[in-house]
Length: 357
Ligand code: OGA
Ligand code: NI
Image (cartoon, rainbow, N blue to C red; front, side, top):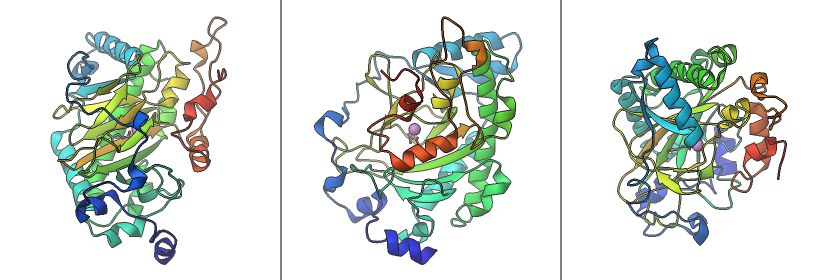
């Protein structure tokens, strides 16, 4: 298998990390975005005028104060499909350890990482670069390792054995995000007027994909991106970042920089919640900028219903005035879609909408 990977992919695979380490003064042509898609990197953009929501979750566990937290969540979901959370129950040492394991993984020599390379989106553990280096028309300044993470015992043996601390440190963080996701989806169901337990069973048995991203220093951050505009297929994505770089699109189609807040985690609504809420909430469109000075790491934990379980608008949120605006879809349907289509050309959620105009 290793040989096959090398033969098929070895010649055309160059990681962003390898380019940075080689000291290239310019990004290769395949990374250069058309002018209309280039980011505006002025530090003032989005940081001054707009206050993105930061929600303290400690009161979620207090029956008297819970309703006010649910209200804050509802407002954030309606306005942005995005919020940051503090006092979320995941200790800073667990987060630091996960980032440390990721640093060590990406610092490994190329041949070690290439043991896990794959351009097949169905592979449960895979190392790669850009979105899909084999098919991308424009490349993105990102390397990643993605792995299935829930249930942990089913997948952990397939995770990287190097660095030796990886399984233990990233395993702990994965389990902690699974617990946090359950609490958040309960709160989000409640904020929509549904039972707290609306998706309980599906979430318990749900899938979790951990995308561990590395955005190395980039010589020309004004003409490249780490990830193109997209929304996640997940119910929710919980994101841990080592420094600033994420941007979200607001209702007026402006790109807003997400500030780095020490110890906080980012929560992004994905396509599954958009469908479940029958469009009351929208998945957030986001992209990643790169920079000249620091290597940025992130853990995007994409939680969803089980692989083949279809999500559809909650019956309680469908009525004569507001008919179902979406068909149903599963994580597996999403994988089939991305294996055949370029996500930068058409968003997956648009294919699920009933009224496509
Ligand atoms: C993703 C993603 C954002 C980031 O992996 O889907 O959007 O900041 N990541 O790395
Ligand atoms: Ni994303």
